[in-house]
Image (cartoon, rainbow, N blue to C red; front, side, top):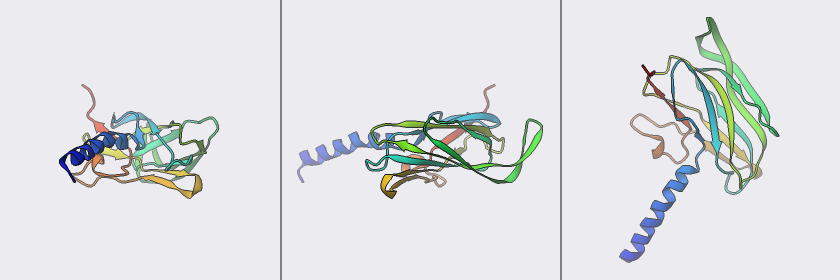
Length: 175
């Protein structure tokens, strides 16, 4: 391969890299403080290889409690509830169970993007500097799916993965 062709190939890869990063399911607000309510807005930018999205499922991480999804016109919501691994204090009471997974079922053509919203409380069990991940499975027509479930290992970042789970970075409270 000639240098000119290699340079052109390299330039094409660089141009495509940001586009692939934008293709991931992400959270609109990338940081939050532990001990506060967090409004999670999942942004779904496309279907699966041209197929329409029929269902979006999000796993709720341990320590994100009192979760409520926002209704979405034309979509049905299912909440899978279960016991938490621990007990959490909220508004003077103890919470030991709640939403473990949310799913929205409807139809989102590949030509459009959409947002799926839920809120909950990030407990104080999350340390500043850590990231809380929300694994997402996007089910599409024809039985295809995109699995945004990769959680970075220590020393890695979401950029090191092809299908990273959306995450929110925990920051220290403002003084």
